[in-house]
Length: 156
Length: 156
DNA sequence: CTAATTTAGGACAACGGAGTCGTAAATCTT
DNA sequence: AAGATTTACGACTCCGTTGTCCTAAATTAG
Ligand code: FES
Ligand code: FES
Image (cartoon, rainbow over all chains, first blue to last red):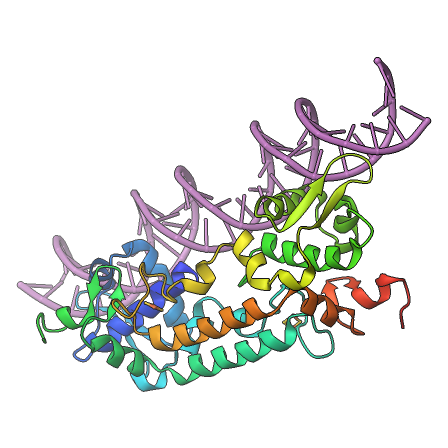
């Protein structure tokens, strides 16, 4: 798995929240049950996102989490970096310390080229882009969760 | 880490063996000490490579492992597939089951494009290519192992 | 003020990857 | 045939990720 489970949960939740926090906070229990993620586990993942300034959280009745910025201002890169860190965007393919032209491994040239592309895509893809994509028909957000059929329950 | 430690060890060892098995088998203990990998652990990794038909092994004095085919006929893809499996080349970025156009996730388009590139690079890069690259000056094969300075100990 | 709701956070179990160690099996050397 | 060498393989430990559960703190509703 290229991304950790925590990271995947964070991305899915962010997309979900982006579509549902228009009128206030979205409760973590709602996200967890819709996306079929363990509630307590998701709690910790979203805590990381709030600590990184990507989300705001609020306790008490009608509390929950909400995006700290507009969905167009949060990139996939931000989400991955907040949870899994930036290693995936900078690390040597063979796991050697200090990837760079000064100390390249045999796969360096090809790998860095691919990494640069990945980084570019991740930085350009905003939460809004992902949400728009997800709202198209038949696009899945989680295993048993189709964005389109749940938005207003039958957007068609 | 994009590749498992086992996989990285397997790749490094394969490059090493490709350069050293001209006159017979290379012992695993030699590979392990040169590349600074745990001997017993490496033993199991290389067992996988022999079971997958990438290497031949031979027991007894002057035994060890050797490539089953020419180094130009073993691709990086073969090595990764043999140890980590093909998930990295086929799996959904969000870990959803059944990645495909029929059931895409929001990141599908960009991710598959990148995956296809990765697959192409891995399939085109042969052990020979990697070995040639590694034999260039200053190219690392492992953390404390420079190919060029160990080949004949001072190739310059 | 009290009770209900909801996030925060600690303790702990389950699991798999990584690594260690001991013994068996094959093969060569003498 | 005996002993040395080297891979094969099973049992075990260690540790980070994932997941469960319980309690504390903040906040709202009545
Ligand atoms: S040094 Fe290995 S990818 Fe750069
Ligand atoms: S379905 Fe997620 S990458 Fe294809």
